[in-house]
Amino acid sequence: MQPTRLFDLLTRLKEKYKEGDIFVYKEDGKWINHTIDEFVSAAESLSYGLIADGINVGDKIATISNNRPEWNYLDMAMLQIGAVHVPIYPTISEEEFKFIFNDAEVKMVFVSDDILFNKVQSILKDCPSIKAVYTFNKVNGAKHWTEVRDLGTKSVDAVKLNGLKNSIKGNDLATIIYTSGTTGTPKGVMLSHANILSNIISCDHLVPVTVGEKVLSFLPINHIFERTIVYMYIYLGATICYAESIDKIGDNIREIQPYFFSAVPRLIEKVYARIINKGKELTGIKKALFFWAVNLGLRFEFEGANGWWYELQLKIANKLIFSKWREALGGNIRGIVTGSAALQPRLQRIFWAARIPVIEGYGLTETSPVISVNTLDKGDCKFGTIGPVIKDVEVKIADDGEIIVRGPNVMLGYYKRPDLTAEAIDKDGYFHTGDIGMFDGKFLKITDRKKEIFKTSGGKYIAPQAIENKFKESPFIEQIMVIGENQRLPAALIIPDFAYIRKWCEIKEITVTDNKDICKNPKVIERIQEEITEFNKDLGHVEQIKKFELLPVEWTVESGDLTPTMKVKRKIILAKNEKLIEKIYAE
Figure 1 (cartoon, rainbow, N blue to C red):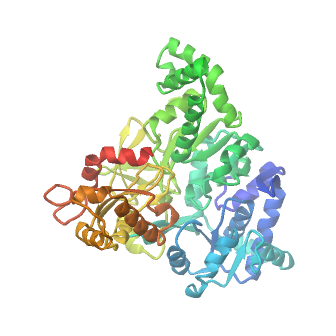
Figure 2: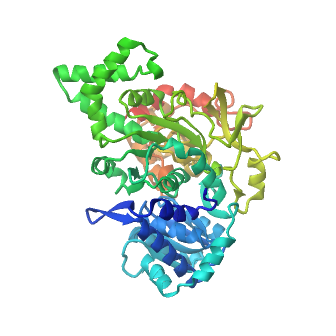
Figure 3: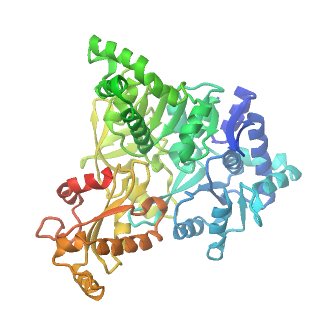
């Protein structure tokens, strides 16, 4: 019987797979196994504890945490009593924390460590709905999550819990996930049990693992991409190993030897760069063979399209070179799924050539998230596309080229924002993605972005206009354009306020001649860096400007850089400064 509520995955896990390990997590330098029985027991005790602590159906509970078993225990505990899970990125600004806490009227918060505990404590006075804050790590002066669990073991009311479970329907609200809007104000995406389960059931055959086989999880579980994949692992009975941190992924992969994991393009880029750098350290015939294999891999095509001679060479390359790449990823890897931003086709080619299939998919938080995905099946993967549309989901290309989607994965709407919901979902039930696309046969392809919001290669959304407006508060900055789509970090092109800076230079006894001289002056660059550093404090970590370049010529309507209403023409400015942008990201 297929699950109809997310917590049915827990029942299915126990009934279908009986016993064994479901989570593996490193504590005090040792990998600790968490069994299916522990998962079921902890979730149930936490449900009782939350009920005893006054949590009712529809109440919101926030988690701000790294990936860990306790997150899953609490998630299931909330879901089976009808509470609504509000997972939050740990790296957002305090203002965003406050907005989310108050908008969702969060009653209880669970954080991972002392840093986040202190951060939440510092804003509690501005968040009146919060009644308690708990931690997953032991923190002096803080309530520990086990207090809720232990309260539950003393407050067992099976009749009430079963009644709550039976009252919850598939279309009931399960979670609110906040994403940044064009103004920078987060929007609460409401997803039901059925929304997320539809994605799991439509995509379960895409993940090549079976019961007990190890998978690695390190992308933030508060993001719907990783969260849905983790639910899928539970559905399949795989053993989920949570990485220690992004910095230790390489070590963890070698220790765990996973069969599958999800990633973002930025990680694939870093893995590839590390491999190439290792190759550059080689000498003589070894170096020649290494780069022969790399160049061969970059030409990879499916189904032996390059001919028998290429395939023979590729077998040799796999034996001599690519086998070592697979060993570096633990030796068991059957596939990697990537999403959240565009992956360079050349990287897909070389990893497929190395028998490390990287499949790219597409989706949004609002679609739970998967809309389309390439697969490991013959004829179901095409480089440069985001794959075939998943079953039970319908995709159309609107008259203006926008990708629109209808199906059981489409969100309930934006929390407390019927106006935004009406803008996003039309009268026929199609969600408007904001992406421009086309079909290449059965394969969906994104060709442009309708909205100005973009993603870095790490899969983080950046709302440039809100950031730009913030930085323009500086007297040193006249115009600014935030860049970084599909790049590893946000950067900016800046037009200084030349009049103001000339006066500042006079005071500081700095000699400058013209605008070009101002843009090259080390003291001016240093002073604008101070402005960037200061304004970055008001932004979430992923939004902060890491690099910038100063431009000597203002953007005007006459130059073609601005619209008649003085809006920046982003494509034109990007094209004009292509070499400068390459320089920014080459360093």
